[in-house]
Structure formats: structure tokens, C-alpha cells
Image 1 (spheres, rainbow, N blue to C red):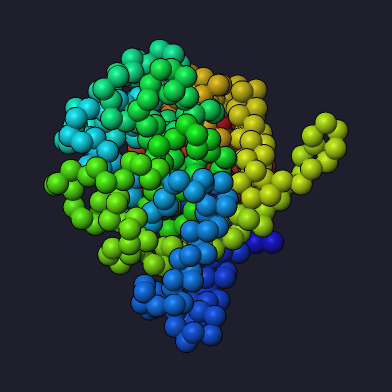
Image 2: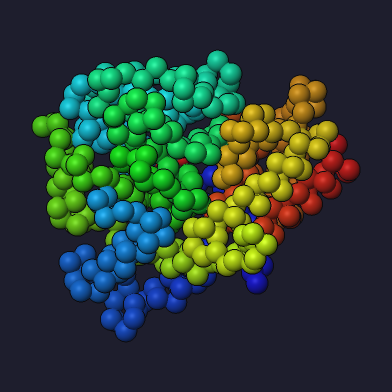
Length: 384
Ligand SMILES: *Cc1c(COP(=O)(O)O)cnc(C)c1O
């Protein structure tokens, strides 16, 4: 296998090596067409084939029901913070559950276009736990309810999507799944719209995936830019304007890689082979468990997130409070320098939290987590 270092970046993040190799091999000539993918018309038969395959594979991987449209857009998660209210709010009101840096940004941006109400927040507990859905102050007149299903910075994740109907709320649920898309299955019966930038778990920055239930199309505000009107984008199969063609191609290669992934599990004592996202889910669970178990038994390193809210994808961690207070900055610097030498890249925490963060997206193999733990163990013995 590869001699490349393990890359723990939160995003843009590591891609499967097989994807990068295939892209490299096809760079000058895609499938005998005489063209690289970047050089193709988005309306030519070659690119249409790439696009249709990518869309079909994504639908299959995430078991997206037929009543949902899949849009390949541009602008990233941050643009969707505006595009969603421009399309769904009707200029009225929407409810936001604030659980970390990203949902906080979403609520703030939406307030430009509608009344954005924070109906629950974990800010008082430093974004370290999830407010129980039964405590949310859902409003009957909300056009939609927004959550960030995996908070990339604070490392907290909904292990289950809220069932708004069971809470007496008919509004569609909007999820920002940027940083855990395709890491686990999605219960589409609970979702109206999901969006995510590709650069965490699917491909390069520049593609944004939007999965939207058809009945939510066609309500854009008149000030909504045409290129961001979901109905127009859907009607034109994401080609109302030029889509991010190369990014779609790379995401498509990642989808094919995902479809080939397998893991064994046992059901009632019999071995079962899982494929695709189901396989990733088991693998991601095992990777995260290994790291959290290590952190929990360590007297030097710690996770500060309440166990039931911990993200499988993004693991912020710190030196214990005493060490941090005594010589935090120098210790983190030494840690990161040594990590780089050990072939463990981009472990620095987000600037708003400090400390360290290991992102364990789909492309991170179990061996990468094992190598990280070996380094943590060695640092405990000889780095302090
Ligand atoms: C990275 C990220 C975003 C922002 O993506 P951009 O492409 O930078 O706009 C939004 N939401 C979440 C959860 C993210 O992880």
C-alpha cells in the first residue's frame, strides 16, 4: 500500500488514493476521448455520461428516494446558508438549532432573508452536548427547521436525526451534512433538504451536493439569484449554468470507490458482508471508538465532548487542563512537529477552539487511527 502520510485534515481533506491515481491516469485522455475531463463541454456526451453515473451512484449509495432531486451546485456550505432561506423561507420564519460553529453561522446568514429563530442552543455548555429534541421550542409557523447534523469544529454529531413529525412539527427538516455525508446512512423520511460541500468526504472543494424533496421546489424569493434557484437548477439537471465539472468527476470516482468498499459484520451469529455506505458506517464507528477509547483512558489527552454527542468524523482533543495551563502552546507545537515527522498531517485544532483535531473521514483507514494512537502513546512516554 501507500507510503503517503496519513492526513487528518478537517477539509479540504484526504481522498482515497485509488481515486487520485485514477484521476491522474485519466488526466490527459478520459476513456479514449482525447480530452481531459476539465476540457470537456458540460453538454457533450462524455461529460453527460460522467454526470449521470455520479448522480445515479450517489442516489444508490445513500438510498435517496425518487421524490428527492439531487443537485450539484457551487458556493459551498456557506452559500447554502443563504440559498436555503432564499428558496424555502418565503421571507417568513425558520427555526434553528444551534449546536456549534456551523449552525450558528447558518442562523446568522438566514436572518438576512427571514426571521431566523434559535429554538435550542448548547452554547451555554460550550457546544459540548446536544440539546434533546424534546426541549426544542419548535414554532408552528416555521417554514423549515435547520440543524447541522455534524458540527465539524466542535466535533458533535446527531447519532439519529430528529423526528419532527413525532414532535408535532410539520415543517421540513434541513440538514447541513457537509462533514459526514456518506459516512453513515440517512433516514430520508425525516429530511426535507440536505446540503453539503464535497471537500470533507466526497471530493474537491467547489461542488456542493443538495438533496431536496420535490415539493419544496418552486418557492424561491424573487431576489434569489437564478443560478441558486433550486427549481431552475433541478429543471436543468444542474446545468442551468456550467456546473463544477471536474469536481463532479472526482466525486463520481469517490462514489465508485465507496461502492466497492466492504466490511464484515455478524447478524445473529452469521457473518454478513456489508457494502458501500453500510460498510463505511461500521468502519467509521470502529475508527472513532478506537480513538475515543484511547482518549478516555489517557491521563494526558482528553476529549471534551459528552460521549453521546461525539462525532465519528471530527475528534477535537486536548492536553489535560493542567498541562494546557502550564505549557499549552509549546506542548502543542512540539506535538504537531513530531506528528508531521511521524507521517501524521494536519492535526491542528480549529482556530476558534485551539488544541488538536483528528478528522476521520471515509478515506482515513483504520491503520491511520492506529498510527495516531501509537504516536499519542509515544508522546505520553517521551514527549512531556
Ligand atoms: C466546511 C463546512 C461548511 C462550509 O463549507 P464551505 O465550502 O467553506 O462554504 C459548512 N458546514 C459544515 C458543517 C462544514 O463542515
